[in-house]
Image 1: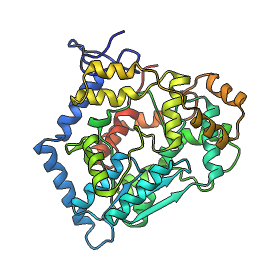
Image 2 (image 1 turned 180 degrees about the vertical axis):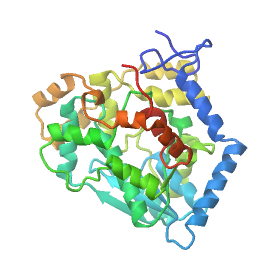
Image 3 (image 1 turned 90 degrees about the vertical axis):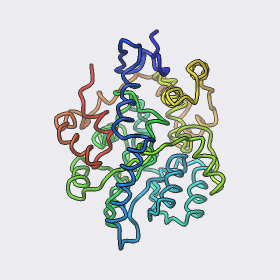
Image 4 (image 1 turned 30 degrees about the horizontal axis):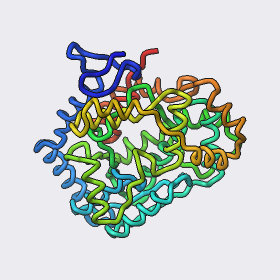
Length: 378
């Protein structure tokens, strides 16, 4: 096994390569992003200061000058805290897929109340939510939680349009979390729709599905800018959690994306048990790059098997109304991927020059351009 000399990614990672120094292409990608954004450096802080001035200028006279998507997790909660310090007037938007943990729901309440931030919550119909999740379980793909990511993206765009807001802020840090290996995970509206059409039972009457043409409308007509402040400034999850606890009473929920049961099931059970995908190496590698962990300690943690969570499995079976036999059939059944279903992937690749321009102007996320707009090896 070949392991990167700088992080803990190895040659089992999708589309990985190593240079003459034994450093993987993903570490080099992080290096380039840090240089491009000036992350944590005076240049990056100045770039973001200029963005802040523009947000405040264009939001003058409006009740809100930006939208922040919130989940109750560390990054989005901390972004609300900083937004108020920066003098912004954010509207917090929460997509409730009805699988929230009690801790996440309470965290959202605590942070928005402590900071006096208005909250807009969309609650997906229970039956639609469960129908979507069961569809993805039956489809045999690793993106069990894709419907939430896709629905949340559309909701943020819709709310921004409703209130005439031109800026959407997302709490993501490539330094603290890394970037998903290319080709490991995928999602788009056509993918969600095709999986549901093949395995779903009901109609999607409340689910906010973002079609390709809606996506283009938000970017080209509404010109909604998608900003990730943590790509510019110095950021530490440990520091963020400490500050959130002290200032808002926020509570830690135990791990990356574990504030939601659907995400927890995806990361802790479905992906490692069915596909051999253990995404802990994403955040562990990020901590090694940042000097928070040694490679030896990170590898020790990564090589410790994930503990099974029977209560979470029981919850999923009860929510989706499936028997032990059906559940085991889904977990042990054929492994499939987005390549087995209809997607917009080829269209994104053809339009790569356009999306490069849009990413440069913050009209689409940079990570979307990097992950979805380039052909993948077969």
